[in-house]
Length: 166
DNA sequence: GCCAACGTTGGC
DNA sequence: GCCAACGTTGGC
Image (cartoon, rainbow, N blue to C red; front, side, top):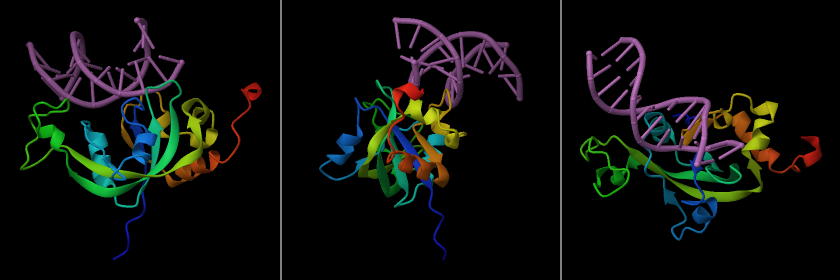
């Protein structure tokens, strides 16, 4: 059977809550991505396959930016926080017999050579249409095209734009 | 802290 | 099924 086409992802996290450094330093080498309670993001999670590359994005911080590369190491399985009445993400409609919410495990691969601020990404015409830079975007898990993924990874190897050129 | 964008809820 | 109200996200 032919292998499924590789898909590429962006996953957002607030660095005050869980940063890329936290992922790198995780004693188990990976972290489960729980707490997703948006159907579109859930569907993306369930489409992830082991080995898929993930861009790690820091949101809700001084300089929102893509900071590192991770990868999927375990495919979707039920998110137990949905069953826990004491958890912030408790959802009484999800029951263990037919769970509504899922999570995947991801592991850090490496940090980018330099982090790429949202502001800079928004200025690159090559990234037109990228969901991450669309205003009002609130998804914590998004798909990204291979072209956009490759462009972002290569952009991190280039020098940042000089302030005078803005 | 403000506010725009968006998803969800619930009255009708 | 429509849509106003509300809550949340997240850039600024």
